[in-house]
Length: 480
Image (cartoon, rainbow, N blue to C red; front, top):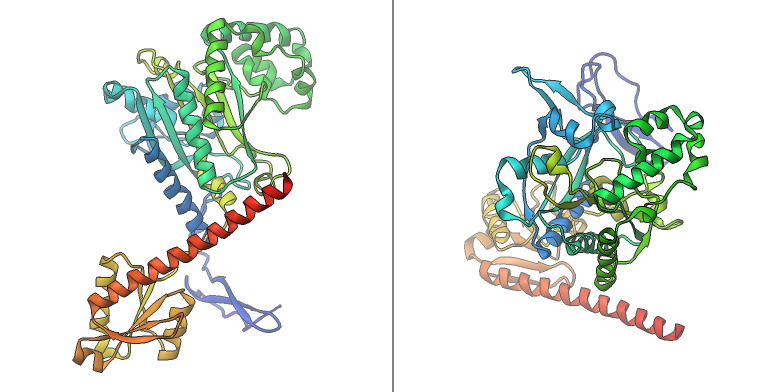
């Protein structure tokens, strides 16, 4: 490697390019920045190119799937009063004590950038009187904020998709929500992921389990980590999440929830698992999966990559793809009536990592004027094609060879060529870039011909899919 030119002195400005040269070519690797140029804040990211396309694909797929399950779209403030999150997440949790972005506004109120969606949704449900819509199926997505150590797939500003069912206490609500999550992952093409499922029981079961954990861990209190000794007094279920080696020695023999489940809690969990089986959702029991906050009840779940799968390798230590649970006690903690609810959230960045890079959709039609005099007509034609729902690009830079090359590289099916003769006659040259066939057509005829090309492409793609399916069926037959 060598620099292609000596570095100039002085303020270079924000757009001067830095080029590194290898044996055969030089490549642009980034802009010069003066010492006064702002840098991105640690833990944030600028998403562009193939990464942005993957991000958009996750959101678009979520929007499509949530409509199939008739979840209503909603938007919420990006900040709330700090008490909304402190009361819902618990004063002793790491999120509240260490990770929230809180500030005092000019009116003296303590506000917090949302670290998660559920608390804000619950506040909106209560303050707007949305009880009239219960059971309310609601979905949203957007940016969240937590001050934590940035790592692969985890940022201080990150994005999630979120789905909740509020006002439904039946196990069927849990089943529908989990079936939707499983469906979403399949639509995204994410494989090698399994639903890990547990029950936290009803309020009485959870209280009895909590007492059992206090007795068990209390007997070895002095051998626990300092964090777990503190949790023992405030939130003993969180000890079960500990990664400290001093705590792990006691986790295997800790009391399990099953020993404390009431008949009603057992029946609820049985209905959930049978419903998942009926919906074709694969799951496995995960007795160690817990939720530390007291308002969680019954179902707790996470979708986790299978060991050795491509998803596990892509995510590394950040194993959970999607998680949630039933939080029947949350509304009461925010001053509302007892209201059953269940929900899940998933990180868009993590899902985008599993989806892989996606390129921008190719151009369908290229409009190429032969000179300056034809550019206004080209603008008119390009806009007409876009209004007819064709992805269209106008190529006006460079000589004719470069314009056609760029149109071909963009994946255009056809080029509409406009010169002086076309302006005079009103007929435009339509060139099929796959066959090379070129015909003089009116704009209406071009639109009709373009629909034919799109239909032919769709049929070709369908034939490819059928061929793949036939090969899979043949392979299954050979296995039998």
